[in-house]
Length: 221
Image (cartoon, rainbow, N blue to C red; front, side, top):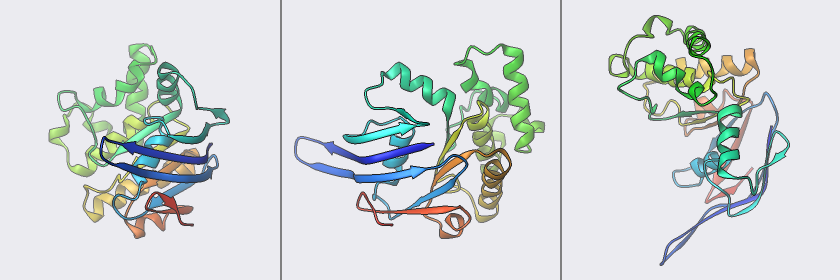
């Protein structure tokens, strides 16, 4: 599904250089559920951003579904993100002025999908995450766990091949976190969605098929 060859990421300022990723080699197969662990500042989120085509590596080569990514235009990368990738963030990133249904529909607007089809697809994924009855509510009227389930629904509305989740349970209590984790495991086992999840929680990473550990930007296993 995705392959990284000697991926490095260097951030430069006038006074300092920070090597966020150092020669990462990683292959993730279709249908895999992988978690990335490591201490704060070790490069976990940077790695996820590179995989998600949100940040360009300084060195190395990246392949998505067999297609080389290096040198692609911003327009091509945006199209690949919209059609192949889904994102779930710790802070949900829902738009407060839009109701649940409109938040979930949002990524489909960029596909020129007819309004009726968009609405049907949004209702379908909201039912999948158990929140169809909340489609007319606004994020401020939902619990944290419900907001994260809406975020997951938005992420999978476009039927992504790869779902990238950055600390998806980080702002939730243990009960709500387990609900979100159960939903992610279901997407992986029942729909075959490939998932890469950044987490610091060993109890969550132990529920995934493989764990990759980072330390100071390097892969240590």
